[in-house]
Length: 256
Image (cartoon, helix red, strand yellow):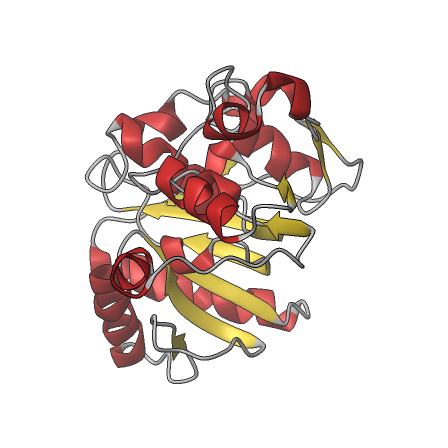
């Protein structure tokens, strides 16, 4: 759009008086500036969670030098911090908030459930078999939306094929071409699960190979916070250091 306007001339809309932006942590300073240029007479409300800032251009919305403060000025910018979490059970919130810096400020809504379950199996075949068994148990409990969340789109394809070969015929593979979500069981990469919630989430691979670098911390946090009622994590070896660092009273471990 920017390049198009450089060629054809700048177009602005002076009738729009308010612009609302969701997932604001994923917008770059350039994009905010461009939006302000498009709507020069509009005020702007930006909602975002920096704990879920999983893209390279992610910025901190509440920093003193945030692009919003630079665009509108300190006197014209106010910050409202929402710290109450309503999506997940208290047990899931206590688990996930301990993964990120500043998470201690998050206050869970007092809805009780089971603690997240950590499952280690010897190899990928046993792990996939366990995932299918856990999915069957969750469905029997009446959960309608269940997501197997992977780190990448490639891993989603591999996980979907592997689970399908072990009998997971009803699993939907969610890609960037998928137009909508339906109830049921799906395999989905974490970046497509942002902003979506599920009754139960199964994190396909919570090993150091998947989540160990600091820029992967928020990926794992985002995957886990998609769960409303149940959260399961799996590995065939060690656990991600972000899981190992959590207090043992925040989760349960499956034994076999």
